[in-house]
Amino acid sequence: MIFAAGLGTRLKPLTDTMPKALVRVGDKPLLAHVILKLKAAGFERIVVNVHHFAQQIVDYLRENDSFGVDIRISDETEKLLETGGGIKKALPLFDADSPILIHNVDILSNVDLRELYEYAEDGHLDAMLLVSWRKTKRYLLFDDEMLLDGWTNIETGEVKSPYKGLDPSSLKQYAFSGIHILSPSVFPLFDTMPDRFGIIDFYLKYCHQRAFLGKVKKDLRLLDVGKLETLQEAEEFLKY
Image (cartoon, rainbow, N blue to C red):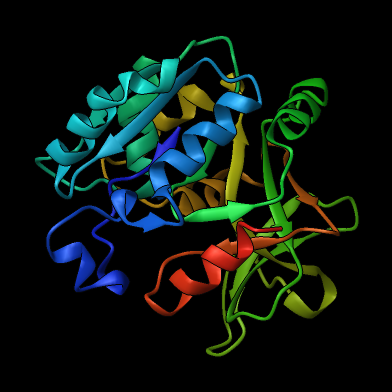
């Protein structure tokens, strides 16, 4: 699944007239970069959620014959559902027996998506979150086995966790990459969530009951193309 429904406010004024997914980096839009990466990794069905200038995305996919893969649209035109709500709405569009790889549309990386997917599938995990060490304000918190225990904002000191009195300093702190894999084992749990919610809230609600593993890629090259100043950087990124 590609998250392409966001408003892209950090990319204004470009996103005043187009969705973030169609902002070009190099010779093609962000959406095309992610679709082609998924296709090269062997994925045959892709769900794209849409909201902001939704019809532009639908038209773009049609004009490009869906890049030769089965692309399904999850329409959030009426209401933006955030990351968790977006997955919940899109669940009927997936194979109910297969894990879902989820990828933000504005993420470029050197990740081998097929290898990542097979690792999660073979490990019988409830979810796997690709993480890395980088300087940020918000970190996911993992135990010694890299199982998710909570979340913290190091600037405000806020901690979210089902474990009372969790001490962030005693845990491994990693930043989330925007790439993760959900097992069918947790699909029924989405029925307990509201229509609109962030996926991290879902992970934090159930991390004490389910195996949500953090996967560290030590040589990770990843760029969040979410701001105007990163567009030029993104073009350089694609050269390597």
